[in-house]
Image 1 (cartoon, chains in turn orange, blue):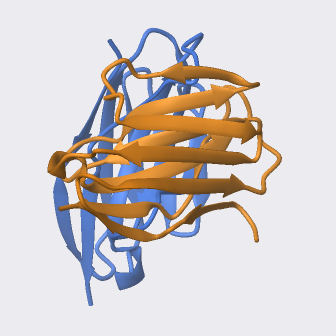
Image 2 (tube, chains in turn brown, cyan):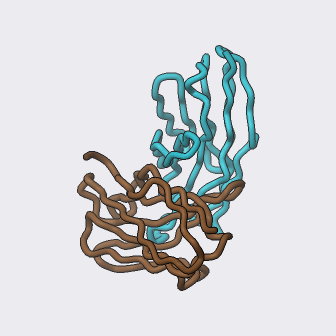
Length: 111
Length: 111
């Protein structure tokens, strides 16, 4: 595997489900990001992990919970989501303050 | 607050018809300006990073330029495979990992 990988690529879940998105980077970076991309809107930064420190967008609801066990892996835990959370969720990685490289994304549909 | 405005929102070109995409930005000290290409349902693919006014970078039919207020992505003799959404983003100097994205320009190249 090369670059940034994400699984699953597609996910359909009900509002009462719990699921997790996984991201893995093979670039030797030490910063990882979660973004949300909705139609007609710019990418929205949700969370950043850099050198084991977490930075988050205060507007992200608590039903989204990130986890970064090491510099190569990043998870986004989802619970009791709403239909408006349906979007493309993108993971990215970079060197600190460097260019971000993106994974292919997870297309999430909340019913 | 950092801002990125891309124009036009959509652009339709005949194959071989050269044109330019615009990215206007306001940022409190520019650390870097990024161009990405995004195909439908996929993650953004990195194209260029520009760091200072006057800088230019080229890749195949694409050329990116930077001034103190805007960046242009010039497309010379485009082909149908250049059809995609092109995203511009800026990173502020000192801004902790924060990158601000534009909405993008959706380019369609017709054979």
